[in-house]
Image (cartoon, one colour):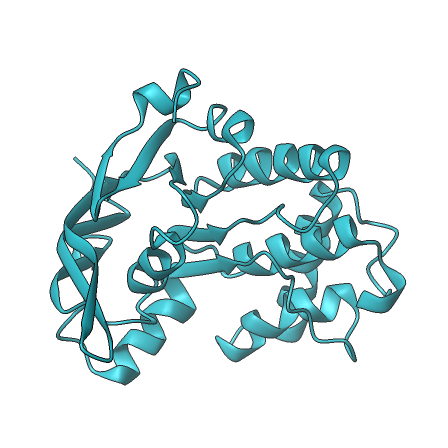
Length: 234
């Protein structure tokens, strides 16, 4: 049996504000299997973004373990964590964070070039991914020449460029109007499934959450089965 793409084991995290303590994770645990798309839901301020940061090795929990592809990561050096993020994890945020001076294709090529991929091969991958997202005529356009939906499609392609085992997405359609959000989400799901990548997606949109393989709810510092959420209750 394949190792989980992502496994969180007993994650704990407390923030201190003066003398007050805010305990946002109380032993949160989760497993995301290869190729599985999991929606992460919960009220604003529950800690969804922080959980994604911990899963992506950007934040360290106070206790617990994060495993990527079955490999424990908490005792890794900073260099090894950086390498793991570069090769095994893709990130998509609510804001696209594209580099304005580069074209759509170049934005998708950059993480590949950093990973040592030859320019010709990186361009081929960028063209393939952007083409699958309907942007084959926009490869040379810079972000300012693209619509909001097109910019987010480029960000999705960039996150998948290095064939990560895990994709972490934080409200990836949150800045888009409902019609564009639906179109981009559908393409996001289709492309992610087509690439065989596991995904953990934080979203407030329960309609979109229901279309993923599974829903988990961040509630009082724990991750619980979101069957009731998927059925329309929160």
